[in-house]
Length: 415
Ligand SMILES: [Zn+2]
Ligand SMILES: [Zn+2]
Image (cartoon, rainbow, N blue to C red; front, side, top):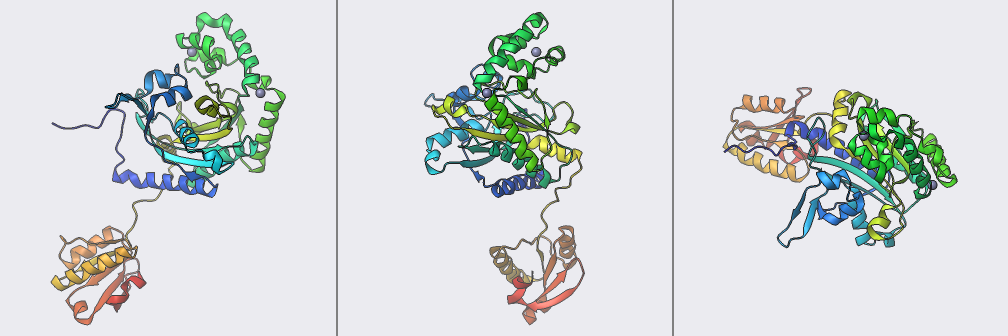
C-alpha cells in the first residue's frame, strides 16, 4: 500500500523549509521588537470555545471545523483560528492581573475543512498578534504598523492597506437598519445565503462574492456615514497615528466583520498581484469578544495572516529569501588516524556552535574536497598523514583558495 498525504494538506520539504524559516523568524523578530511575546496554545480546544467566539451559525462552525470526540466523549475541535485560544488562555491564566496591557503573538497550524483551492488548505499556517487591555487608538495603529514593518522587512513592495471602522454596537444598530431598508427591495435577486444574512447579519451581505449580490451591494449605504461621535473620533485618531507612523492606507467602507464583537478599526493587507484571493492578512479591534467568551469587558485589537499567501506574494515579487544555510566548515579526513582525530574535532566544534559537515563514505581527498565545494562550506579542514605527524590541520579558505597550517588545538578559533 502506498500512503498519500491527506487532501488539502502539504509537506514543507527541505527545499522549501528555509523560506518558511526565514518568514517565521522575520515575524518573530518584528513582533519582539514591538514588545510582543509569544504564546503557544494547544492545536485543539473545547468545541464550545469556537462556537462562542465565531457564532454557531457561522460557516466556520457549521461546515468547516474539524470536530471529534475523545475517549471520555468530550467534544473537541482542531482550532480553526488563533484568537479564541489566546483569549481563553488569557482569561484562564488571569493575565489581566499581571499587566495592564498584554501584547502576545502566536505562530502555528490552523485547520478548516474547506474546499481545497489555490493557496487554501485544510491545514494552514498562521501568524497573529493580539494587543489586549487597551482601547487606545494608538494600539490599533501599532498593530497595523507591526504588520507593515514585517512585510517591509521581508522586502514586499506591492502591498496595499485598506482600513475601515465598523463602529460599536450603538452605531451598528442604525447601520444594520439602513442596510435592511436598502437590500429588502432586492431580496428576490439575492443569493440564498444573502437572503438569510438579511435576517441575521445584514452587513455580511457586503461580503458576498456572488457577482449579482456584489453589484447590488456596491450602492449600499456606507458604515462611515453611521458612526457616532465617539466611533468617528476613534477612527480619526487611528488615522492620525498611521500618518505619524508614515503608513499609507486607503479607506474601504466595504471591509466588514460579520460578528458582533468586532468594533471600531477593521483592516486588510492586500497584494493585488494575487488576483481574486488577494488578502494576505487582516484584523481589527474586537472589544466585545472577551465579554462573549468570559463575561469581562477587556478591549483588544489583533491581526492574523497566513503564511501560504505570504510566500506566494514573495514568489510573485521574486524576492529571494536566501538558500540553504552554508556550513562553516567541511572536514576532509584521509587515513585512519585522521578519521579518529577529525571525528573528535567535529564533535568539539559542533559543541562550540559551529556548523561542520563530514561524510565518512567519501574516502578520497578529491571527493571530499569536491563535496566541501558543493556544500558551499567556508573552509575545508584537511587532516591527512602529514598533518597527523605534525599535529596540525590545514585550513583552506574555499572562497579565496588560500591555505594555512594551524595547530590542531586552535582550529575552532580560526573558523
Ligand atoms: Zn459607535
Ligand atoms: Zn449573496
